[in-house]
Image 1: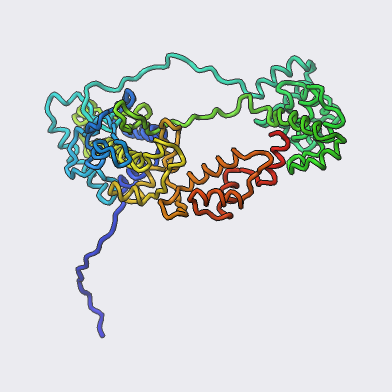
Image 2: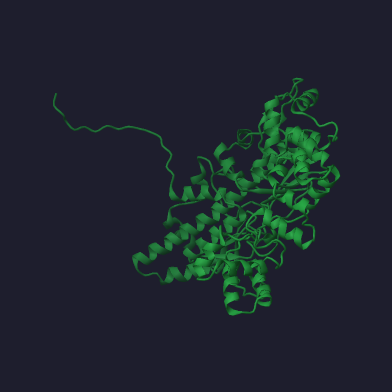
Length: 530
């Protein structure tokens, strides 16, 4: 059989992930602060982009009013109804009706049709639409205001200078250096002390196994290193320059004049204290029950990591991405935190100047690419705001009993439940809930918190959320009396009597996840007066 060339026509379907679509999907996973960093990098790369002032804060829309295109029919129904347990859900989106026309009319983008909704990769068409704009618009700017709306505004980027400087925190090393300058006077002593201070970690411990290594590095004898170390161990905070937990506690007890032989024996047997073996501790220390209880209380009053009160890396507070609160008419209002959302501007005036100055083909191509990229970013940010608002509103509607009554009324929920509710893909919901936090009257919660597994009901009723079961388990343990410690079997019996069908191994797993000791350890702790 001879091989001959031939032409075949075949039809197939495949999903093409363009670079713009990949970046748009990536935006969903970013928190507001991460998004601000991303936008700043885009502004550096694209001369047509400017960053304006953040939004003036979320605007609340009450009474079930229509909040814009993100508040679609299902959201508005939640605000009008009230008897379905949702008590009315209102999506406050600062008027997410966009100034630009998304011809598809579908707000549930970021799924398979995401590419057709949020950007136009045709740079030439972007340039044509810009050049054909009305004359009065040439000095304006197309902007995304952080709350979701895209609009045209006049004026350029308001560049503001620093009007104040921040005072830096004093680190532990700086604090020790100031004290060392007073405690030691000789140049050689200060040189050794400076080296030892450099070896102190954030917790205040000396990071070295032996003083012999330090003496060898500095070319001196171990006795001199030990003498200077003993001076440094008298500095504040008490317990600093210790090489072990026992030494740290000993230094603090010596300063309090409480390091007697019985306490020294207790410090030398901290492993028994960790095991709560009070009988063995009483024998080792030679004291009775009242004395050992008082000694343990003194130990617990000490600071095992004294250096943490100074310097160290600053703790960044969690900034909420979504706010949830009740309006005056009793409806739950869901709104984006526009204070942390970047405001992106496409500077039309600068674009007009660049278009006139671009004479060569390469220059015109560069301007076209910048226009396309800038317009895509503005639309992508708008679509991101719409999607986050839609998912958050669906969460509040589904978990309305949690917001009303607390953790015990948290419902079992999966990503698929929310995805089906808002007609989006599961992966989109997963990306939206990743690293996003919601602030509500009951506290700050990560969006992932509301997705919990279910535990069946013993009486055939609705299933229970695993988080609500954990909460009930902790309630029972916190309320137990020292003489009536509840075992895991007893906890199972109580919860099954309340209609929660739970196994003993599940109780043990939940208890360990919450770092709650066993019944034997809890009995010892209660007897110690903890």
